[in-house]
Amino acid sequence: MATSSSDFKIFKTLNIAITDILKDTVSYLTTKFKQSLKVFTAASPFGQIIIVIENLSQLIFYYIEDSITELSMIDATRVSSIYSLSQIAGHNPSRAISAGGEVSFSTNSNSLEADFDIVLIPNLTKLKCVNNGLNYVIKMPQDNIKFSMKGVDNGVKLNIQQGIIENQTFVARGISTESITVSSPQNFFVDNYLVDVFVNGEKWKRYDSILDMPKNEKAYMVKTGVTSGVDIYFGNDYFGKIPKRGSQINVEYLINGGASGNIQTLTASQVKFEWEETGFTLIGNEVDLNEYISVTTTQSPNFGADPEDSELTRLLAPKQSKSFALVNIDHYEAILYRLKLFSMINVFLDENDNRMLNLFLIPDVSKLFNTGQDYFTIDPSKFKFNNYQKNELLRYLDKTGSKLISTDVKIIDPEIIKYVLNISIVAFNDVATEVIKRDIIDDVGNYFVSNKRRSRVPKSDIIRVVEDINGVDSVSVAIVGEENETAHILDPNYKGSLGLDEFNDIIGTKYQLPIVQGGFKDRYGNEYNEGISDETLGALNIQIKKIIPRPLVLEDDKK
Amino acid sequence: MTRNSIYRKTFSRKERLLNQGYDYKDNILKNTMSSQMFEVNETFDMYIKGLNDVMYENIEAVKQIKVFANIALDKYETKIK
Image 1 (tube, each protein chain N blue to C red):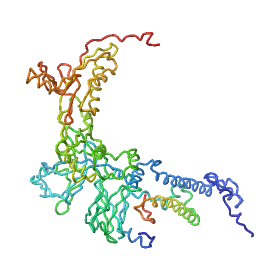
Image 2 (cartoon, rainbow over the protein chains, first blue to last red; image 1 turned 180 degrees about the horizontal axis):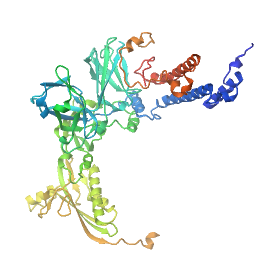
Image 3 (tube, rainbow over the protein chains, first blue to last red; image 1 turned 60 degrees about the vertical axis):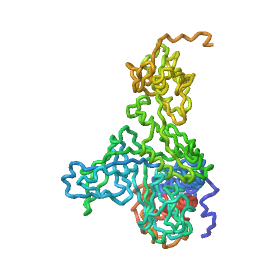
Image 4 (cartoon, one colour; image 1 turned 135 degrees about the horizontal axis):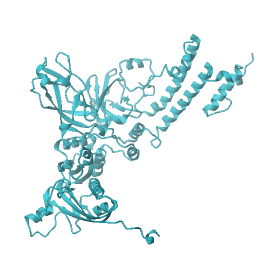
């Protein structure tokens, strides 16, 4: 039987549309096997095969397009891809940072009936927070702690971190600058710092660059993964060390929820934890820790931060190649902005020692407003960080980059200066006075929460804020400062004005933070109480001087 | 390992990896076609298995794009999601 190559030619033209390819295929088969078109419907076996193959082929084309699109920084849509590409560009995007806190343990009444004296609590034991339902792990430097049931260890404090620990094991190939890819579906939720590598059970040391690794040091480097998860790089015997062929490389990392692990409370003890995992007796029996050991929070979880915004990464990556260095004020401000924890960040050189950088940081108090408080009633101490939080912040800065040897940083406490606002308004009669008062309290509070200026808070700004409220016709504001009033009380002949200028604007130094809160007396004996009340004077006093009908719009105005 | 060695399996034997995605190797056509198509006769099953393998190789080939772009992986690596 004579055959020619054209007999086997399925595709007549160079088609790119899948439907055209399908049409050509069906046409070839009907001609070749002299079959009706009906044979190739979805109801027939061969028709179904062709349709399935066609759909799968479409998917393959989609995968190819997707792979290529996700390799371009401008076109990439997935956050993981943007992170990966910026890694190649030299910018190390900040992945999620897990919230950290401190808990203490004590035995409860059941421990008296326990038939064992010591319980072993392993490192990375899981706890579950009752308040937000998230998992936290106990992080300690050793493998486990022995906790006595006799009560002698009560009060022992340990650090916790939000997240779940994952483990993956690889086998070393024994080559120079060996690299491994640790897969994780969302690389940005792999903790920025907690990635530990053990080679044959021995913990190796992490460095930021291969050039930092001393010769033959057991060292590795972690980078946000190029395709997914994180990538681990080892040395080459000149810088770092090559893991021996066949060694087991165990990578342990924390998957965390970023800022969602933070818990803002007024008292840390409000944060409750339950044990998710068991402890062990010395002979290896499992112990339900919830029965014998209660957990008390001493420092509520904080300083968790979401991964860097992908749009920011897209913007920074092409420009940045020194993201590991903390050199000037901008670098510090950029690294602190990533935490999204502060309402005000101001970094400046110390006047007395220009090697010292002062960090003026105000916590974002608005995160506490869901606990039934507002700007005018919040405890003034919440505008400062406590010692534990300061230490955590400094630790974070140490971890994020290489500080210059010749500089040091100091977190300075703001000097809180209290002011009171007396507002008189003329209101229109078509809006209820309660509504107007509520709006004034909300808007003035929001203005002060979002205010970034400390050297001058103009009175005209406050007037503008009140003026914009529906129902306010005219407004007058008087600002009374605690510092100024105290000076006048102490010296009745004092003619100056402390913290206020001739415009009645609030004037402060770079170490001061003006807040609107009561709790002091003025020179005339008026007592301004804390909070806001209709009966007594407080932080914000609103007087409705007059209520007038809203004027009709004049014909001339209409024109 | 920079060469596609037959000893590759000796390394992966002790590996414990997570997040490798769904293992669709033998299930592509099983999950996309009517169940009436399977176990009808041996020849037809073998034919479908052959088609399944072709489709699997085609899909896996796409991974090469990702692998080539990833400096942390060697060119014969397939264990990526």
